[in-house]
Length: 161
Image: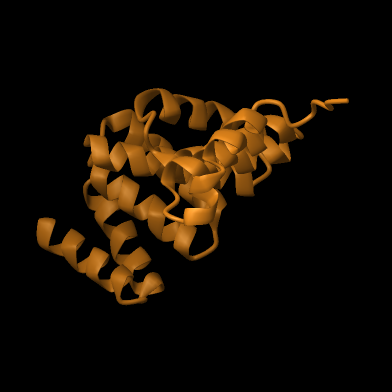
């Protein structure tokens, strides 16, 4: 099993997404209670652009229990997949769970801001993105204005006269 899973991951890394997906489907059939295989299978469907088929595999992988690293990526994948399917509330709930478990993951926060945008929560989406930007940038000019960007991030709708 381990060798076949490594082969599927290798195929994916080399751009052989369809072949990787086919192998992962076989592995899920053989080992349906293996969380990692379900997670990898979900990811393979996302790469093929058939997100709707990824959902049950993400859900099962998360339910079965993943390592912390895989759980972090699976929650991001599931939240993003829900968003692309227009299931914005499910996406939001998934990202909120992910942020609670992995509060320092800026990728999760960035994808969450996209969901907030889709839910017309534009101010909150911008606040999160601006905070991610100033907390992770190495750009000197942005760093120079970090204090101002942080100040305005939470009050984008305010008007000072």
